[in-house]
Amino acid sequence: MLYCHCEYMSTTKEQRLQIRVDPSDKALLERAAAASHLNVSSFVVQAAALKAEEVLAERSSIRLSEEAAAVFSEALEHPAEVNERLAAALRHERKFSWLD
Image 1 (cartoon, rainbow, N blue to C red):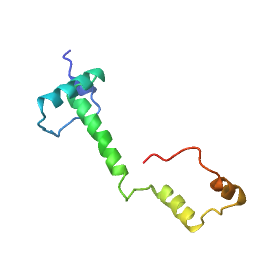
Image 2 (image 1 turned 45 degrees about the vertical axis):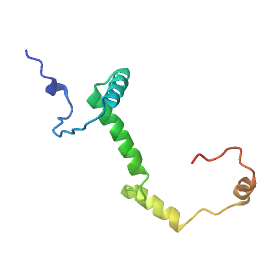
Image 3 (image 1 turned 180 degrees about the horizontal axis):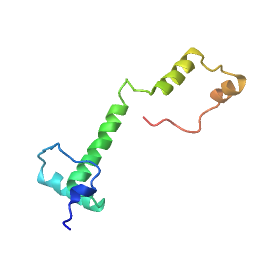
Image 4 (image 1 turned 120 degrees about the vertical axis):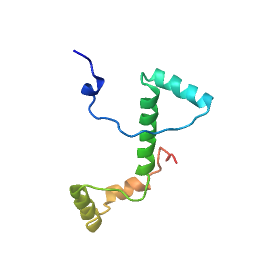
């Protein structure tokens, strides 16, 4: 029986992405891919996809499921009331600082 790698792949990749890089960048990507036990293509696609998700998550518009949108709308229409316990907590000095 002849082994066909395609038989064991969950999806077939039909699109091609071509990029040009400096030799030093290519060497860096090759070292990082080897350290991650991935080929360079997989490493680059994985890294680029993670960055793309990060960039898109920072956009001002977000998509919600129908259920999440209903919960969000309900929270906007009926905001929680600030009780004395919460007000007291907000008056205390913070022991942490926000990272910007």
